Image 1: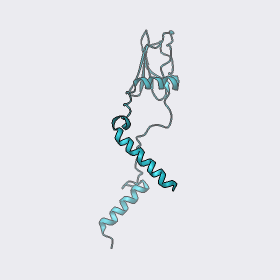
Image 2: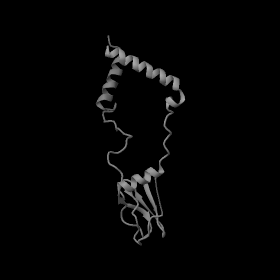
Image 3: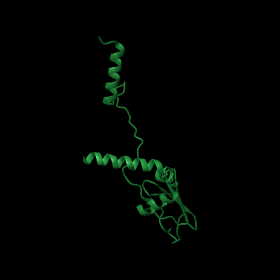
Image 4: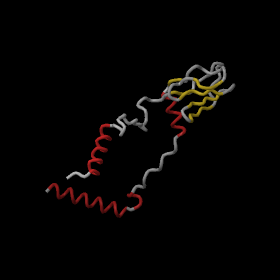
Length: 141
């Protein structure tokens, strides 16, 4: 009762489940998900010349740190220095608090809370309260 099309569909589904491509090699699976490791690399508070951080940004997997004498770029996932002048510290600081503070400042503002129906439709709220009282009275009896 199986047609060639049904057999092909069953074999295709089995190959997908077993993660095998038509030529016998395993499929290369890719996952687009957030890493389980937390990325807490932040700009070092001072460079090698003891100059404080003026500004920082993270774009394209790099942390860019601006100091008075120049800028330094660090890898976002390893903290190693990628680009910069001689005043760059070897690695970025592993500090989750500083990283969270930076992300909080860069975040979009939250939306306002929904309108309280009591303030907008008092009659609806009175009716609802009356129905709840009636329901409670019935459940007691």
